[in-house]
Amino acid sequence: MTGQIARHGSGGPYEASIGYSRVVVANGFAMTAGCTATVDGKVVHLGNPGAQAGVAIANALAALERVGVAAERVVQSRLYITDRSHSDAVGKAHGAAFGGVRPATTMIVAAGLIDPDMLVEVELVAAV
Image 1 (cartoon, rainbow, N blue to C red):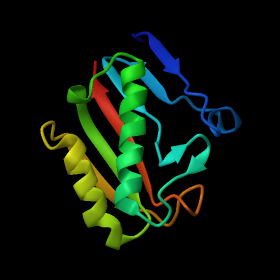
Image 2 (cartoon, one colour; image 1 turned 120 degrees about the vertical axis):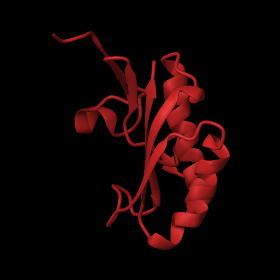
Image 3 (cartoon, rainbow, N blue to C red; image 1 turned 90 degrees about the vertical axis):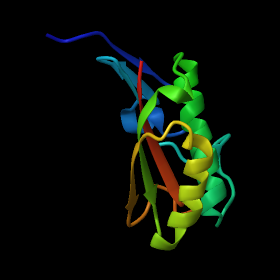
């Protein structure tokens, strides 16, 4: 049996060309696509993984909020970083956002992201 699936875009620069939704709500969960420190189509905080993580997390939380899901409902986060040395700064940004929520979290070192200026990408899953 399949439940209802709702797909929501944000108008981001890659959604149409790649063919994805910013948030998909299905089977009691809301899942974000990977969010980065992209603001108005430009990567911000070049070279600063902690600041980029803060913006990426804020972007992901804003996407969830647009579909009526609060940060307290986040049950899982995935953090993709481009260098192992970024883990402390990114971890601190995650802790600042989710210290009281404490979702199940994974941090993965990736070879690179779609734009070389991007140092961090974040995905969130929340219970609705």
